[in-house]
Image 1 (spheres, rainbow, N blue to C red):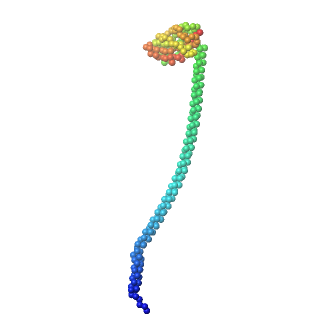
Image 2 (image 1 turned 60 degrees about the vertical axis):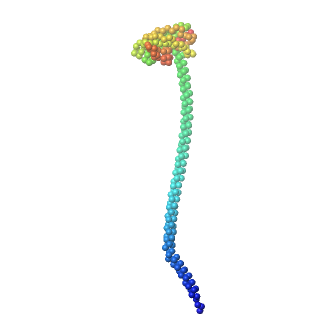
Image 3 (image 1 turned 45 degrees about the horizontal axis):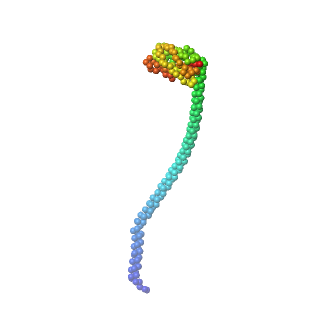
Length: 250
C-alpha cells in the first residue's frame, strides 16, 4: 500500500477548511442581510404597486375631467354659436328697422312739404277770399289790448290819402294812451311802406297822404307798431301783420 504524503493531507485539510469557512460565512453571516434585502425588495414592490394604483386612479380622474371638459367645451361652443346667430338676427332686424325709419322719415318729409304747400295755397285762397269779401275794418286783441282798425273806403282811383280810424282800449275798457304806426303793403310783390307815428288817446282818426308808392294793384293796410306813452314798444309788426284790410288802387 502506497503511503499518503502528509503534506498532501495537510493541503487538502486546509482547502476543506476554507470551503467550509466560506460556506458558513455566507450562510450564517450574510443571511440577515439577504433577508433584509429581500424585505426591502418586497416593500419596494408594494410601493410600486401602490403607486401604480394611485397612477391608475389619477389617470381615471384625468380622463373623467377631460370628458367633462370636452362636454362643457362643446356645450359652450354651441351656446356661443347660438348667441352669435341671435346677434346676427338682431342686427338684421335693426338694419330692417333703420331702413323702415329712413322710409318713414322720407315720407314725413314729403308729407311736411305737402302740408306747407297746402298751407301756402290756403293762405293765398284766404287772401283772395278777403279781397273779394273785403270788410272795411278789422278788430282783434293782443296782449290785453283790444284794437279796431277801420278805413273810410277800400277803393281808390288815384294816389289820394287813405283815411280811417284806430281805437285801442285795455282789457278793462280803459282808454289807451300812446302811439301807433301803419304800413301799406302791395300784395304782389309783397313790398310796402310805413306811415308816420300817430298819437292816440283811446281813438284816433288818421289821414295818410300819398301812401300808394308802387302804383295800381291790391294793397293791405295794417298796424305795424304800437307804443305806450313813454315810447316803449308794446306790439311789433310781426304780431300785428296778420290783422289787415285790403285796399284797391286803380
